[in-house]
Amino acid sequence: MLILWPCRTTIRSPENPGRFNSRPLSMKDPTMSRIIRTNPSHILARAVEYHGFVYTSGVLAHDLGKDIKGQTAEILAEIDATLELHGTDKTRLLQAQIWLKHISDRAAMNEVWSAWLPKDGAPVRACVEAALADPRALVEIMVVACK
Image (cartoon, rainbow, N blue to C red; front, side, top):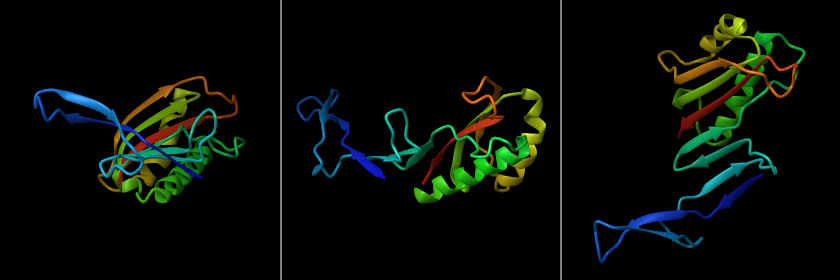
């Protein structure tokens, strides 16, 4: 399900070119930037698209019984599907944030991550150890891509 939200825009004041005004945009305003929310809930959306950028939520594996490599592969497949839904792909990645339950799993996760990335297409990235919401989860990944 996609939900579109109107935004505000900042424009130069015609009376004073050095001053900016913020005004709400109507749905008919051709300068309005749409925010597209994919599968929104009361807590989060699967992804948000704005101004040609796609921001995913943190993605967890569905099968939390898998090892770090299995969970990572499942997450990356989910990210591929989300990016495709928004008309982009992993060749357009800009940023990734990765949370690991155990930082000692970093090398094994990196094997799957590196094999998944396009040649010379690595985004900026942070990878940290963190307590994840579900104790069975070993990794969570969130990315930003452009279209």
